[in-house]
Image (spheres, rainbow over the protein chains, first blue to last red):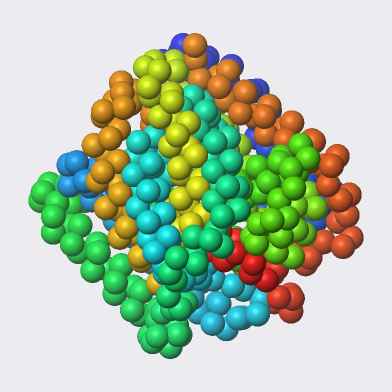
Length: 378
Length: 57
């Protein structure tokens, strides 16, 4: 007990330094870029701390549901989405100009992209937010997958126009279909139905959701709402990653003006401006740093890196590319499409959920065959 | 090998990316930044999001 107390005392200066550095970074961004951007970095840090600290994930709970019919993590996700929707949808309806939802059309490439994303996220056990969090906490497979996720996201956005041309339905939102109040009610009822099915499939002893996940769901929902209120747009991940690669490509002399996406005025502006003024880049950086903060706090960075066979490292690279590319075609990942799409009333969020879950069933089987079951992924 | 060098490498890569980006992008200017909170600002949402289709906005 005395040794433990001494160990905790010796860790205090390091912990204080890490937290001070994170807060200093927030203040520097606020001072040099603007208060909104400092706040967004802080929100990202909060998301990273919550996801890593309370072990709230997306890919892992889907795997638990598919393999063992354990619904707790999935129920927590649905709860977080429902809580976010309860505030976000009325806010967007009342402030349509200032706030926008994650609204996108359902299409062939969108559904196919979500299916591929679901499979790839089970192979590396890391989704959009999960890859960032895992990389921040020192997971080597996620750290390797991350740059390829960015490259894939850039390439997917580059080709997005061609893919959406294959067949895209008109944009449908819950508010358009049922009105603002009816749209929210329909979303909550649909989330409750999915939760009921998940609970119905579970064994009686596995139906309880741990308090940790309930707290995490509430905090994640609160931070997602803050993201919407501060940025004017919902929480997202993959746009920022694609932007990082696009900036790298242009810095190396690449001409990307042939892409309808990257030559659109809004994206040309983003390419010329600093990443410290880009909403999703800031929250992404915060996610990585927040996870790193928790990992160092828990001394998790002293844990050994799991040994993986060569084919697993190659699979991490390929899966990273696929995660990035497919999430652009799907108009978002588990965050931008599933969480933010559904919580702001977009039909594409539901289509994404269905297609990605089917893809996950395939991905769970592929993961074992690719040598990841030895312990390198998280 | 522990997770520490991996986390440090990720941290360094992010730091270098930001530093190079700040040097290569338009100068940061907090005085032309949008209001701190979008809600109630009276300004249209202008950020870029994953759900935006090609050529949007």
